[in-house]
Length: 443
Image 1 (cartoon, rainbow, N blue to C red):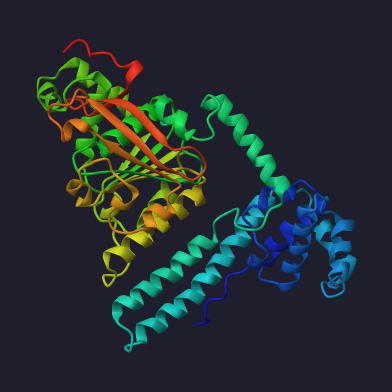
Image 2 (cartoon, one colour; image 1 turned 45 degrees about the vertical axis):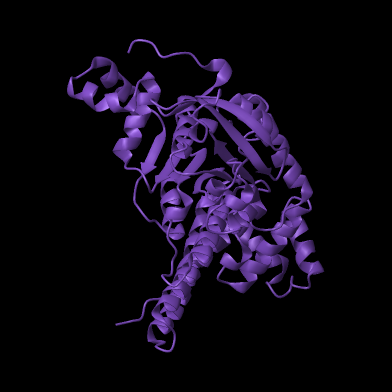
């Protein structure tokens, strides 16, 4: 029996190169993700590298410019001269299928990389001199690095490209979020300080247990989904049925404890609310103790079929490490770094909920500080924004601020810090903008 061949497709490689030479616009479709190292044949990789060089100089990568670039790099004769480039053009009747050819090239390259990684993982299996936890961690890192390497947009780009993308995002924000630089939180007072949750940002929302982290995150998810924005929630603490119960309470403005009773009675308003919620683009994974690789993998699968505007992780300290040997500091560090990478990969904000340490309880002032973030200083370092929830009524029964919550924007890498005031309805576990609040009716 013949051994299986190393995966490659020279016809697809020639198809990519011929399409680009035939139509100068074809490179736009593949340049963000197709890399020179994906090509199996060395001279094909050299030609594609020359094409990218022309494209980044804003020169059309046609037969003349690519030939000149290869000549400048002293590689024109090595690849077979201009006659070989002419052959590539002659083989392709149309450039319409350039992305299909490119995906085939990328798929074969990924297969070759997996074969190489498989050999390294096999070697780890035979290595009895290394603790098994370290070997598992090393194997996971090999796959993680391969996955990270497939991210688009990792190559150097010109400032002209950055400027173009920036202008496009600002124009889109003006249309969708009223001029915010990022995704609205659905709370104007918070948006005024943060200018929204920007693409690629890790936003940490932290508080002591029972203060309202999940409630605020779910209120945001609910508000965004009502605008047609997709929200993916990793709920490692709360079961999905309980999340749905809270959403029904948000929808109707009634106490969460009343939902099961009304459902058992077949209450028409609750049934209608369930039907409306079923149409909202909120997606919940309630698997406990996911590790960062599993989170990324599940996020990719969902994002491949459904547009997602915000990822929510509830909560950060419940995610697991790849190695049982990691202490809490290292575990939290790897998770916060992984969530930052997730945000950048999808160009989507990630809202990660976080517990605070008990240190806040031992101070005269109970207002949370950055030093109260539990588990690792990496959370503060990796996060672009850090928000704290403070409710004075939890510490002072005589306060005049009953039902009020302060959202402290204590870190904002790209903007101002400050405090936003919201109203918290404990019975419905919903946060309201103060100027928009009104008492629920009908119950």
